[in-house]
Length: 251
Ligand code: 13P
Image 1 (cartoon, rainbow, N blue to C red):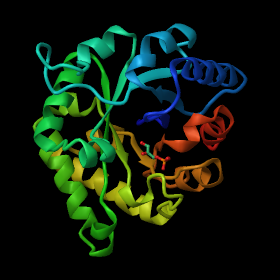
Image 2: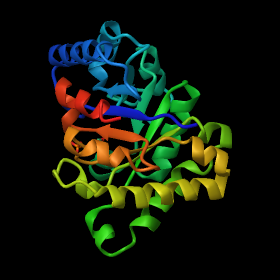
Image 3: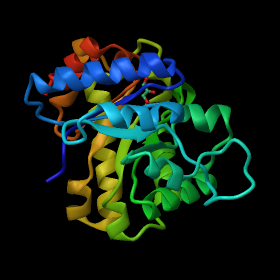
Image 4: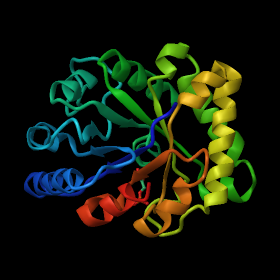
């Protein structure tokens, strides 16, 4: 059966020194509990190798927040999936709405990134989600379905089975406005149905689908209690060890 997962997305926050300190704190806090979920922190590229050196990889997974859509070569400033993997990272967030919105990432680009991540043994945490207008005009289910079909449905069932999905309603990210647990469950159940139609019930049942968007210690338990919500992708609340652990311990 699928895993429960709580993953932090630090975004463009913390200096290297602050990041290493935070990673150590999370690592230490995790030793004090027996979490009922896998825990991953996704950190800036500059932090990966150093953070990998201070965490216990049996308790805490490590991921990047992005990778390039090319294998290697003359792409100044880009970081390849192979480079990410060479730091010891095991996961990579792909398709985050901030990348789609500010850096023009579309399904064609994301398809390449997913393929390269998988080819380098990384687990993609693939983000999907609608903007407020799409939520309000009722097209949100179709929007998310198209995001999944366009970027991911070229994968073999075996490769699709390696993914983690994260539903992040864009209107709930960093706004303090959370989808209700019923809104999250409606979408997560829908996503699982879309996967089942393409890859069958077994693949769908084994896919972890995380919720992201103003998930906090105060609302995590209600969200995670929903049958199709398998954890969270946490932005702001992952920048403080205590609040991140509050979410981990919501399971
Ligand atoms: P917040 O938790 O800050 O709303 O961010 C969610 C997110 O974008 C995680 O990827």
